[in-house]
Structures are given as structure tokens and as C-alpha cells.
Image 1 (cartoon, rainbow, N blue to C red):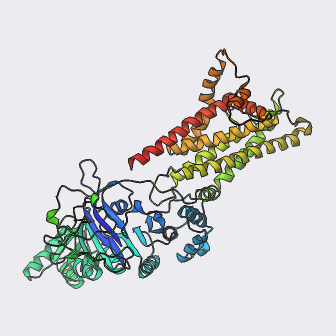
Image 2: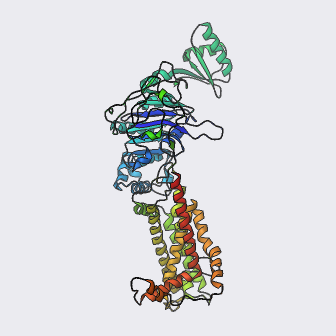
Length: 635
């Protein structure tokens, strides 16, 4: 069961809230439609329930709010808009990546593709999907964790009648298995045709909460739709003849010369237009909405409170009759308080008698009490972060394209550098001329690191409708490990390609292994990994890939000159003998061979680029942790 109690959005400057004290429930085993015109607050209500927007109120999914559910994807399936994925990723790759995020087996991707009718289109790119295929894939993403509750926003928007019929058939099948389905719609006829329960809202307030039979009887009625260039004249004539005949006829003028006539038929309207020489451009029977005012004889009777799994009513639960014109459908005087999910504490202070010490009447609850606040919480991190990150990185062509472009550029620069004497062999192998701030391999590693976070902010995939990526330690460590692996692979391949290009163009005599190859290799690997991590952390802090690339370029352009000035300053003391002093301080005995390793590490760090990278990474790590902790404090 899905219960929404007192949902109220945060109003903007001087404007009324988009959702105002909205209370309703979607029972299990039934399809519930949240009906309202454009701007009535349907999407805002769904986002409040999913804790995507700030406001007040509470929404229970089988007795628990969303932030109390350990694995939300296994409880609630969400479809808000299009599928948030990289356009070059395949449908199967997108689902397999989300499988790692939800902690379900990868085989589940093929199962949901077959369930939504995309079994043969798993290798198609997201950017090439039609509207119908995109909706099917979005529904597959919602069904990935086999959730009990489905929350969908305009799921049939842009679909053909055949796809529309298939979609609602699938939703009804999900409800028939005991699941809860809630979808937002702006078409009353569609709601009457496809739903079992209809909740109508207008201006963010509850208008009616009815079964589909009562909804069709009280809120839908036949009408005649007329389009004419003389709409005002025809409306006056029809009203005059209805008064003369003492018949109840209502004429509603709409935009673009369109009239809706209630209480008549096409034959009568056609005869009236003919007698008064009014040209008609359209004349048709239709079934339309009766308006936003609730019929006075209709009342909403709350369903008994069900158990956490949609079973029988829990002992001590009380129904409640809610009068139709009231704000948010509060309990009528003298009735028992509205039902409360069993897990809700009394500290929430919802004024509908939500205390666990026994039911209270609405008159006993202070009007000053407000529903609990709804805080915007970031998406939960993936349950299998390393697997998720690998599938995210390898699921698009960007990684391979960047690596190929870097290798070709590095080989070309290395061959051009070798034409002139005076370039050291290490710079030839790294393809690092003096005029470039960084070699191509280091720039490519930084770009891969920046895109590791940047692509997720552009194409969020961890949760539908969320534009933020969670700053979880597991996800950060996985990204650091994967980007470091790609950086080392790219650095090694760049040196190998440069050496082969030099050997091919100038012969083998140019390539000689230097004596300090081990230290040079460590410096080269540290430069590549440092650039990758700098781009990754900067993109994570500033939420854009361009910031990561800027941070990588800032190391040689801005930080290195500052570090060089520090090292160029006169020094009165030396660090000679550092390994011996470390051995004296250590509680274990360092082997004699460790002196060489300590000195090598010190030499690498003492280089301007190495020191600048170390300084930049330290600053970015602190900034990343600070922003992550600040987000947790806001909770």
C-alpha cells in the first residue's frame, strides 16, 4: 500500500504551493490514477513522495518512508520522464549497469527486456530509440528490482493506441499479482478506462478520491464538441433556445472557437446552427470531464489500514469519512482519525491523529501542528560499486575513443620530437615537448577521470529523476581504482606505441634503456594516475566534467610555477640521511634495500610536477570530503 499524508510543496516567491495538504492512498492489487490537468501538481506530488523535492508531509510504501528502505529499487519502481542514460549506451548495457547499482544479478536485464518486448533490441543505442521504445525501456528500468510499487508519471505520453493498450495491460498484470500501481495522467477518459481507483486533484488539492465506477458516474458525462468561427453567437443561440424549451443545457466556451455543450446531442446542435446560418467546422459526440468541483453527494471513504504486505486490516485500524470540499480531505468531525502506517512514530506530529498512543479525533489535534518535513536526499550508492563502475566505463565508446586518440597523438608527437637533437629519450617516449603543459597520455588520463563523474551528472543513472551522484566512499574508491587502472594502461600503451613508432621511423639504435628506468617509470605512472585522480575529484566536487579538465591543466600551468618558486628559495638545511632517520624512528627495522626505494619516492615527490600533483590531490580530496559531509549534515 502507498499512503501519502499531508503532502505540501515548498511555495515559491509569493506563489501558492504546487501541492497543498494532499492526502490519499493507493491500495495494493489495484491500479490508481492520479488525475489532474496540466499544472495541477501531479508531478510535484510524485516527486514529494519520492523525496526528490523539499516540502512537508510523509509518504509510506508498505508502512515505511522511502529513506527508511534499505534497497529502494527493490521496493519502488519509478518512471519519471525519459531514461536517464548516455545516448551511446546500449539498452542491455544500461540495464546491466543498473543491475549492479540495485544489487540484482545481471541476468535480470535480459528478463525485463523480454518482459517489456525489447528482447531483440538489447544492442540498440539509447539515442536511437523511438518514444515507444524509450517508454518500454523506462518501464524495464522500473521493474529491474522486482518492486512491489510502481510510480509512473504520464507513462502513456506520446504512445500509439496499441502501445498504450500494451502498457496498461502490463500495469494491470502487475497489480493482479498483488503489487501497487500509481500513475499520473491528465486524461479523464484514459483514467476511467485503465484504472481501478481515481484520485483527482486541482491546484495541488484533493478534489475527489473514488472508485472508477463512481468516477465515471459523477465526473464524466457526454457532451457535444462544436468548432465554429462564430462560437459566441452559437453559444448565445443555444442558451436562448434551451431556456425557451425549459431544458438544462450547459455551454462552455473553450479556446480557438471551440464549444462544449452538455445536455444536448449532435442532431439538436446541428439543427440550431442550420436555422441560424452558423457554419460548423466540427460537430462530434465526446465524453469529457465534468469539471474540478466535486459533486456534493460524493464522499470518500478511506479503506481500512492494511498490513505491511497488503494483507488483512491491522487490529485497531479505523476508517475515516473525508468530506469532499475540505482542504486535503481532513477527517470529518466526529470520525476516527485517518489510518496510520504501523511504522510511523508520534514525533512526526501529523495533525491527522498519527500518534501511536491511540487514535485521536481531528478536533483534539492542534491546528498549529505541521506534517514532518520532506528533505531532498541524494540517491543511494550502488550496492556493487566496482562492478557498476566497470560497466559504466566500458559500456560507452568514449573510453576507447579517447585512448585511441591519445595513442595516435602521442606517437605522432614523439616522431616529430625525434627529428631534432637535444630532446632526452624519456621525453621522446612520453611525447612531452617543452611547449605542452602535459604529455598527451597524462591529458587523456585526466579526461577519463573527469568523465568518470562528469558523464553521470550529465546522464544520471543511479536513480530516475535525480540529477546528483551520491558521494559514497565505496563509489569513490571504485572510481579511483578504475580510473587508476585505465591511466596506467594508457601510460604503458603510450610508451610502447611511441617506442615502436620511433623504431619504425628512425631505426632501433635510437631506443636505449636508461639506467634510471625504474625511477622514470614510477614518475611516469604517478603522473598519469595523479592526473586521472585530479580530474575525477574535481569533477566530483564541481559536478561538471569541464572542472575536472581545468583542474588537470591547472597543475602544470598554475601550481607547478608556485612549487618551483618554493624549491628555488635558498635552503639552509638538507634532507640527506632521511632513510637512516626513518629507520631510527620506525618500530620495525627497515631493510637496507629500502633506502633506495625511499630516496626514489622522495625524488619523485620532490619534482615540481610531482609536488604540484600531490598538493592538488590533497586539496581536492579535502574539498570532496567537505562537500560530502556538508550534504550529510543537511539531512
